[in-house]
Image 1 (cartoon, helix red, strand yellow):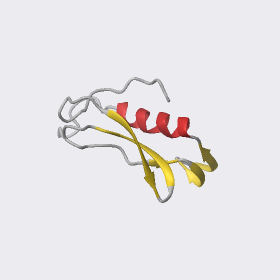
Image 2: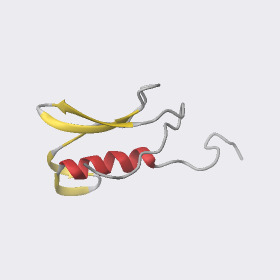
Image 3: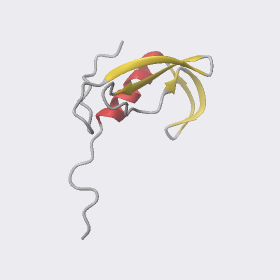
Image 4: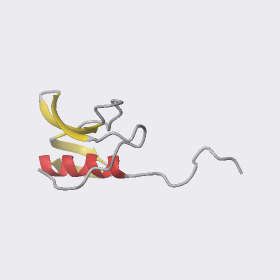
Length: 84
């Protein structure tokens, strides 16, 4: 299992969890907050003809975990709703 630290939930501050599930008969991973249920889109293990702008990509369990954790941990800085 990937050892990247998960940041807390950006909405409620809850402790996020890496979850494994089955999607379309394939193992899939996502990060979700058990408090408010916000989460990433699941990423399935397997072969993709196109993934994240790349062509012909095989997603291993480790790569799927790393991908969803990196997306979860990404934060927008500043007030994105501010008008100039």
